Image 1 (spheres, helix red, strand yellow):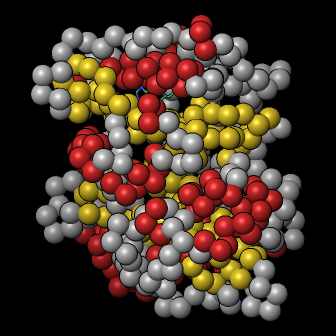
Image 2 (image 1 turned 30 degrees about the vertical axis):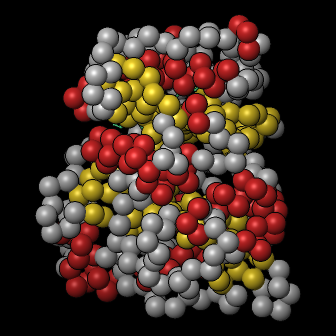
Length: 413
Ligand code: YNC
Ligand code: MG
């Protein structure tokens, strides 16, 4: 079935839940790690990409723009910006050796890519150093030639050389073996455009006018003390986030420096932006805090990021502007993740409702979220609808039982 994945240290089909959490293969001392790069097919060569170099950044951008993830109907394709790539690939302590390309030896054309970044991850009660693998991409013309396994083995080797033996990654495809499955939900903002690009359809029982009315978003945010996050908020947000994330079973652990990078991406770092309307050129993240007007305490935080998709074969609308809900935290939520009095749900509905208003004012067409963290219970009230997309979460060389409670409504159709 899985010629490659059956050889890898991942839970195999039919294994059942493990007796205890832990690694599959033990770590190796550096001298036992393979020192030579894996062999590529003839006429191809390895190339380490420098994402800070505008020329190389553009090469990755171009490869992904034309060849990265599409939906099942091949109607939309993710279009990560160069700024997004710089943000995603260069957290504090990143290794440039983990930004791996494959080039045609003769022409030097970039034809494949895979990346890893370091991250501290808590999985239930264990904290492990992992690499987060992302942006695996092979030129369309070179598909189904078993190049992907070579890229995966090479990144694994380079990660092992740095003393890391576990990884986290997500994919739309199902391979051995997801640790969690989430469903994409979508909140329509620009109805007219979503219909014209066939992202959404008018149900038989509705009309365009009715859909526009139902999805109307207020002009002004509702929470007193809501403002853009700034550099001076980093320490408070780092603590708020760490406390809130104790509710969940698989979470990244950020120190203040990592939080600053993740929450205030390059473009917005330490700057005060445009006050939530409009957007700055190349802006990747939108991060906001609630500062209690009387105590001056930071009580809440949220962020979303900009990830447009190419609308394939649409000349009127070449780009769908999508905002993705990313991290958030509120002091209404503490561990464990129960919410018997509905306090968290209530607070988050207001908080993320304000995120929708900011995204709408910034002219995003749609606001996307996954069924993870505390999202699922608030999606319906905020008029999100289920999409066709699912996202599978994977751990490499780490066993734990399937994460529960992540996916209450996420059954595959
Ligand atoms: C995938 N997305 O099953 P078997 S997500 C992992 N993730 O192996 P070939 C994948 N494996 O089943 P193609 C995968 N897609 O025979 C396919 N595979 O065991 C497996 N698409 O290789 C597949 N980007 O080269 C099969 O396939 C084998 O030419 C087949 O290339 C695949 O970034 C791909 O969706 C995805 O560019 C490169 O289709 C290509 O089709 C493509 O013949 C569009 O490969 C873009 C796209 C994937 C986005 C992502 C996360 C990747 C995670 C990789 C696994 C990391 C493991 C941990 C490593 C570090 C460990 C440490 C320490
Ligand atoms: Mg291939």
